[in-house]
Image (cartoon, rainbow, N blue to C red; front, side, top):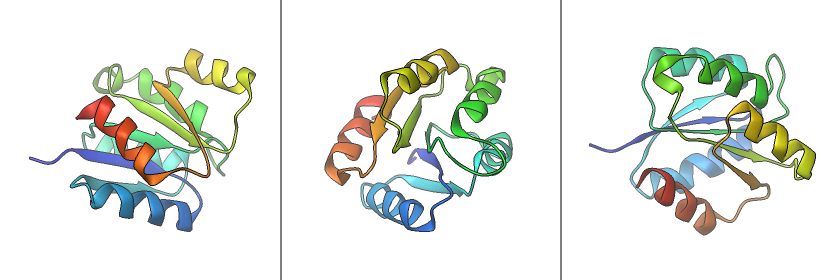
Length: 121
């Protein structure tokens, strides 16, 4: 059974690139357009990993992570930030919110796959 990854980003081109990269490695992909949509989709289906942008309309990535971590089924699911934000302060906020790791855009598809494989196999 392949593992399901939820990608949350308001940029259609980023979602498309991330989905293409991960699907080519055999993962099932669920896409969400912002944090609110991501939260709704995470509630409707169990996922093995969440990749999220930070800056999005309706709900940002850190707020979504805090909401997910409050849910029993998402206390230990890996959540990676994939964002243009790269400051140490923002990374510290991500860690405090419950982010498992931090990747900075633009992303290298090979590096993304390495990190995903390391986190969920």
